[in-house]
Length: 300
Image 1: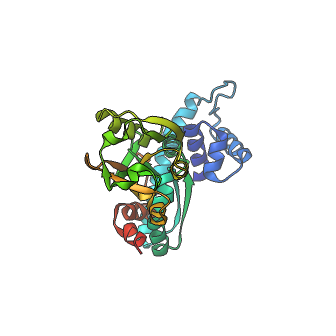
Image 2: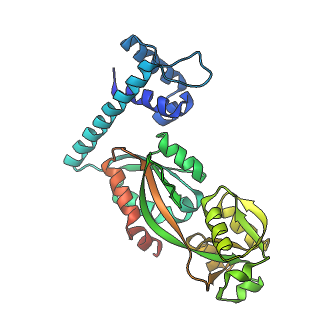
Image 3: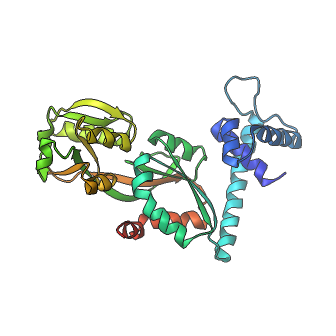
């Protein structure tokens, strides 16, 4: 029996999907099935109830899963400790990020990290917020990058920094003439919003509601890039993180306006599965995300 087989089994138990277990371990679904069959022969026990439509472990499978988790965690701790002793920072970090962070906040930090640790491979996937949480909990990725992190007893949350929220509009829009506006000035305005399940949308809705402001939502999108494109054609105004519109403001395809009512922020966070053993590479990556290095790189 190899540690890899136990890991495949744990990934299968957690994702309840042969496809996802294969994806996580970079093997075929057939290979996953073969490894599970091998474990069943070795322990002379049925581990998965194959007659059920819904994935379910047998009692023996549940016991093997609990012990296998401990074995894998101990193995990961051992491997991580040996790397520390040899002062090795290498390996692969799998990251799932929401679009706005991945496209605008992450790049300078990633550039700095890869320059510092060239033997580390960082694989980045762009996902919707709910999918980032799912991928982290099911071990599809090592780390998730989200805004307005949701508390979950299966996750560890590392607070990073805060993006200031600003109003954006077409440069010829009447509101663009002002350096700042009051939220009440948005009443009745055509508004480009994120889709209702996006955390930033919920936060913006809350801000508007607290200030008794009703806008006319004319379009809804699931990512920041399409929101910006809609505002660029003067379809409406939007409230977005300032870090995401720096290029458009510099090119004068968008105008940004601050709020007189105060500053509103979007908190960013890194999330990873609770009890996960962090490799030296992952610890260094998180430390860099928390620090000012990326911001300095971005200003160059």
